[in-house]
Image (cartoon, rainbow, N blue to C red; front, side):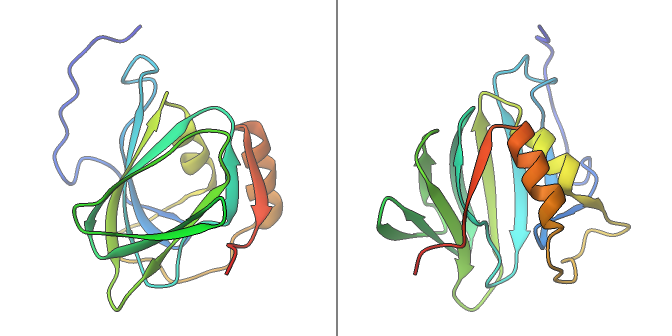
Length: 158
């Protein structure tokens, strides 16, 4: 088990495009001895995730700037700057960026491992700028999701 201190500066992580968000993997399961993974994202209005269920990890979102709308179990709630939202494993959920500006947030996954899904689906970026919006490669997304214990349920409920 890795028990080393991890210290990264803002630009130490390579820039990735993941589901139309500028993404930085800040800490991996390998670096934390399996304890957690930490991801930072900057996402444009309208972007987000499909409705899905994690079977292997819990997700905690911390909103740094902007607004995220979360959907889970028939409920909708909005997280603004400073909000912390815990989404336990085995509970269907999804989110999208709302408002008038991009949203910057952290995703803490416990235990670690989900960041491997992100790395497997993401595209490297030459510069840390907001990626051009594209449709995800759904066959690849579905295959990777299955490998990482994530069940894709469909679009977000309205």
